Amino acid sequence: MAKTLGIILLCFLLLLVSLEIQASGTGNSASQGQKQGNHAMYGATQGSLHPQECAPRCTARCSATAYKKPCMFFCQKCCAKCLCVPPGTYGNKQSCPCYNNWKTKKGGPKCP
Image (cartoon, rainbow, N blue to C red; front, side, top):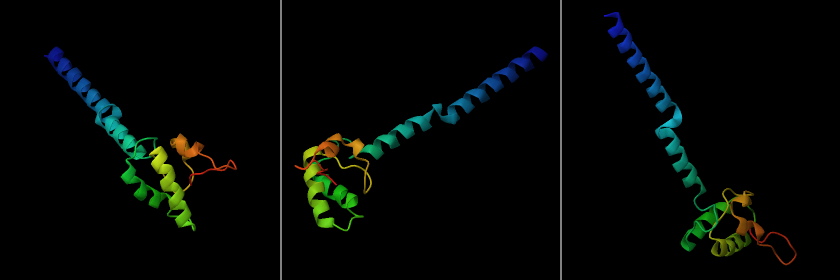
């Protein structure tokens, strides 16, 4: 009787440990995090946008500047060529190398 009770207790503990491991992040939550990560980078990596998606992305990119018209002009020009717009209103150009590396004749950044 004691042996049977010990085996049942051991099986119960193994079940609890396996459930704890699954709930701690090696199960579904890790794959959900990867999906969210990919969704966050949509439009920020080179070639990930369609041309018709440039205007809303550039509107968001240029929302904090006082020079909206030139910002929108160059942002849309860069987006049409690179098919990406870095996230945020400033910086983050490392996520879109084409956007980052396109320079003016004087060597300054072409894309806002």
